[in-house]
Length: 105
Image (cartoon, rainbow, N blue to C red; front, side, top):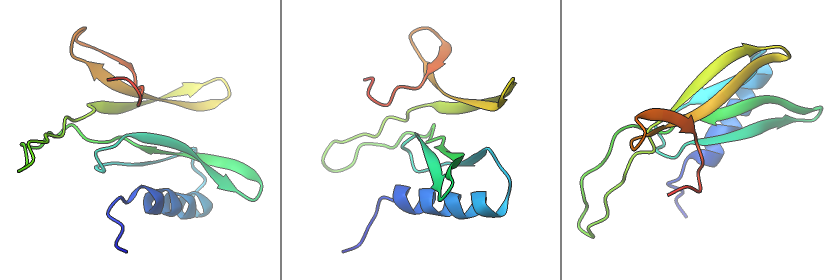
């Protein structure tokens, strides 16, 4: 069976990159679905995988379904314990960013 959703493969590839490079975050994009997950290693979490999603919207297909972009972006700051990342989404009603909540409609 053919797999169309690349999320699992991207997390796997991010794990390989985190083993090669000493990074806190491995950031990828353009799967349209924002996500964040720990990259596990035998010694425990070693990095965080973040997919920033997409800002592009697609036109309606034959079924009438239109994809609405999550409009997410990533902000990484220097924290006291090391780098900190926030996955934010644009709140069109407020005209400002807010923390991304994958379950919010």
